[in-house]
Image 1 (spheres, rainbow, N blue to C red):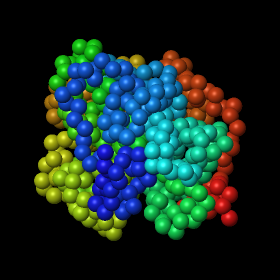
Image 2: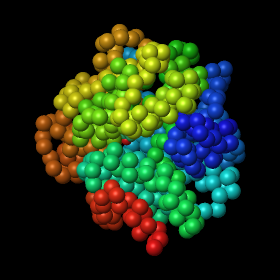
Image 3: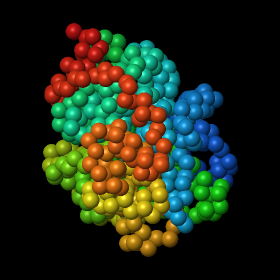
Image 4: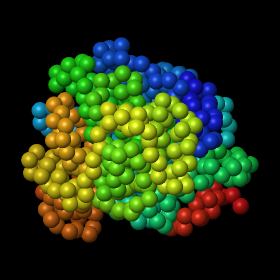
Length: 493
Ligand SMILES: *Cc1c(COP(=O)(O)O)cnc(C)c1O
């Protein structure tokens, strides 16, 4: 399948090329030339297990990949989960939580990042690329660890992760700084996630850097959700959630289901929009934000305004002012008008804001609902939900649960609702414990033990093992020094 840039100046002839390149040369994001249509075969897809379903979804875009090999890779990737990759927990009538945190690093990003190394390596083979691939990641916390774990010791690939020095939880930081593997590097960048992401994006668009790396036999690629290879595997769990509900007689095939998504860079929820485009009966996609509510404002009045205060919250993976993947949505609601998308992105860069047309705003209203909650509401939600259901929410999922109340209350919707749970609460143990008990505990590990005592929820071994691991990475740099750090890592003079 052909992939085109959201800014219209370039296209590539295969998904393999889109995945290897990561970002289009004109600065846009790659999108599929068309959406595969699954509407006629939902009944038969219902019967597949998760890896088989993932293979069907992926292969509908990644047509040039060998299907049997792709299936084997999906089986191998999803065997790394301690359960099904996306089990559904019924909380109440028509109210479900989809747990996406059963992977190696306890966050939903594992679902894409356990399979992405295969998609990338195989993609490079398909493109006849001989160079070594360098993966650059800017992370708000969970992507970094999931990417490091996915790519560690992968042949022909190196990975360098940058995280904001003051923007990730203690547990997230420790998870990254203790990373094993002979092809990995982890560096803290002074500032917040947007500083970090902008610094990394600059490297991607710098032709001089590209040439210099190429001379050393290295090409850049990205494991951030701007890469289509990150996005595509996330489409699968919208289908699997839907089929699970059908197979357990909670809904009938054809009924619409709403999904509530705790949102940051807009990758997760965009995958839901793509699933809908492919024919899945999705009702509303509910975009839940924390105090960094730039998306709430955008969906509610049509203006995206990134010129605002940045809040450091207890849901750090959603602390984002520039949601990169929104560009892919703008492209769709504008009727795939690349020129317009490019103009809006230019306005965002120069004026820090843009406004969509009335017609586009109407499409947003039809497809989405958006709201946010602040820190106090987030904590209250964790406490109330635990008291009512005996179920522990992490700080990100709690934002979604809070917004789902607002959504159901405001619209009176009686459709089945699935909340996407994006992280295991033990990744944010101090704040979750604080929400439930009011206790302030500084150390993440003692907070985990206390949370376990209060909730009886098992502490994952990935967390308890962390305490014994050696810290390998200590470097903190200025955002202007990212390429210097990369050259040191690669031993380039
Ligand atoms: C990354 C992340 C999010 C936000 O997902 P996006 O795809 O960036 O919108 C939400 N919650 C957790 C725990 C995450 O790691």
